[in-house]
Image 1 (cartoon, rainbow, N blue to C red):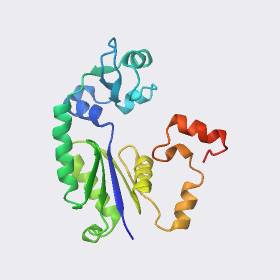
Image 2 (cartoon, helix red, strand yellow):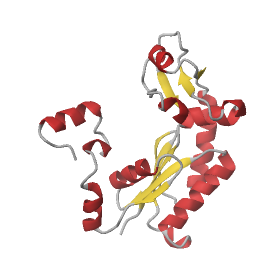
Image 3 (cartoon, rainbow, N blue to C red):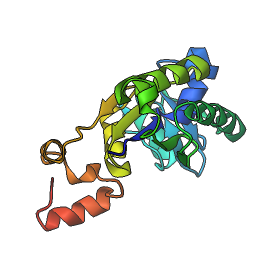
Length: 201
């Protein structure tokens, strides 16, 4: 049975900024355009999300929601360096690594999981290595295919690990009460359209 691991770095750009600026830890950090500029939020820390700030939001709107936030311009070269470190670590756990973006990837661990005992142990060791070497947290999901692994990592956020059941009946039972928007590719607009036809879960 295939085993796929999905890793997603937690609030990646903002977490790098908080790591490099210790005085910003625990405070709302918004990476993107300045609070009075025309532009959008690239990402934000979990402390900022509490106030309703999210990626792609106009920075002026973000400022209105969270005026005490720290606005930081993106440092893409730094994020890429950290991403390279993370992907080097991923290669320790599988030769089959598929990058989705600088902060997200799928690993096929079907042929390597036995080296670590089981999938949960592999996932926890990967998370620990990322934390130790990069001083950042990540969320990991493990399942029998990419879609389910992606859903599993969302279930683990932030800084957690979730292993999806392997039995089809158990998967179905776990998914059945979940909102349709947890599906990869189903955003707010699509969820609204599905609800018109009665599809909420």
